[in-house]
Length: 526
Image (cartoon, rainbow, N blue to C red; front, side, top):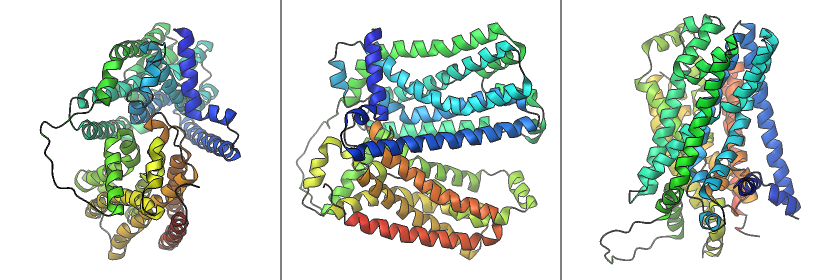
């Protein structure tokens, strides 16, 4: 089993990071794309490490260095919990290469273990980003005993396991429940979206502390964190009091759920995948009239069906606009009066009123169904290329789906924001216009980058949507940079907010038109 597990894990890692293609491909553009992905990944990691280091150093200077490792355990756990759930469905169950893998002389426990190990290694990178800088600053400021170093290193490797298993268990449970429904894809999407929202709301509640807790020293802050995340209690006691028994219990509590999960899922692995790939037919079939539509409408309906049938595609592409709706709904009907009064007392209400259009644009730039729409054609892309229609019609159908996803939710959310925050007529108009411009921008940018960096040779939708897909990373990264930059400038230069927003919006509109014209001149295949 050990040798087969190693080969399966190596194959997963090669497929995830594109190492195999980079080694054996003779295409220079392919190697350039891999270099771009590597450079972007290292840049993002460097930015996160710098941000975490600054945050940890600020806490240490405020006298909260004692709480740093414990707090970072929670931050790492919340990040792992959310990110693992978003990508769990397409990595463990419902793989397109399921038949090929199961035909190999390997056991199901080797398959499950190799895929979970791959997820663990990805989450380990997240854990190192969240915990390593804070741990180093903790050592510099606190000078703990030598055994504490072992506890810190152990926590780096053990912390991602529990939240990862919780997310995977939720994903498997959703698959098991939805597989009994005739409309299992839609049912799975609804359950998955609800689970992500519950995780986000729980995360927000976990991180909420009152003013007295924030002003207390490290021990009080650690106690507040431990109240919401029991495993952190064991780690805190081990670190502060050199409690070996507590650390052993912490390690056991982290490892046992992983072993139990692998054992249970391996036992039901074939049954779960069979349920995912099975199809339900209606009890009665009646021949109806044949309906026809224009090429654009036919392609548009096809794109909508793909979005609703692929859970990981819809979840990753649409979660930004869903979060915007939740935030807007909460601001309109559940904002505490004390918070509103505090904002007005601090005199920042006018700033919030002015920057709100750009703030909505940030959520919009997180939503792009077009960034992976071409890649998801996969081995069936020849149908798209041979369709008796212009390439522009195909691109327009994919852009229209993203507009359909964003614009109705955006306008409803803008109305809720307007209810929550009083705005002038001009501010209200900008609240609708600026995010709308960004909606067209992110839709067109996604198509353009997916044309430049397609990923057709995937074995799971996960690899087309998330696993090293340059178009998705570049679209979301470029879109958020285009919205976060003016947001930052508006906060830094409050007297020039209107000028900044008008200028950036005009540039984004011109960029959208230029990119769209270039997309329309591009053929589906060259």
